[in-house]
Image (cartoon, rainbow, N blue to C red; front, side, top):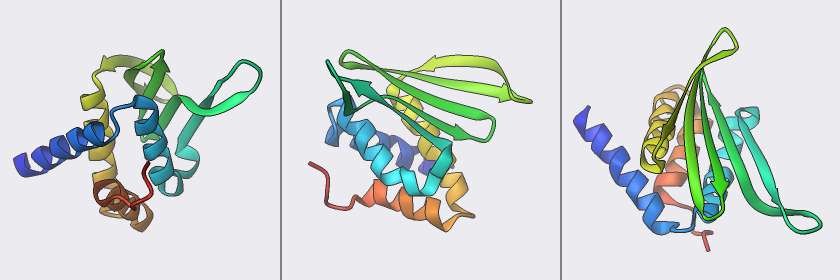
Length: 133
């Protein structure tokens, strides 16, 4: 178990190092997770002066009773993990970007054991597909 946690820590650090800009990090996550998560992945785009941009303003991932929310505010990323029960939010916890990524990747790893699409998306995050800027 410690080795798995260490691997996720290393992966989270690698994602941050490869994508120092939080906007790029979110774009990469959306590109690689969209197929696996489908309607559990909600993306809100930012607005430019007169139209929407392709910048991500907020990313919400629904994973069971948890909702992982990442919101871009200026140049920083605010991350929250919300817990629901019976469709009612019972707790929201602000977490660091590292913790948010660890929780996301951990949940994906658990799901990958039974889902081919999630396994492929997780491999894409770990290995990359060579299309990142």
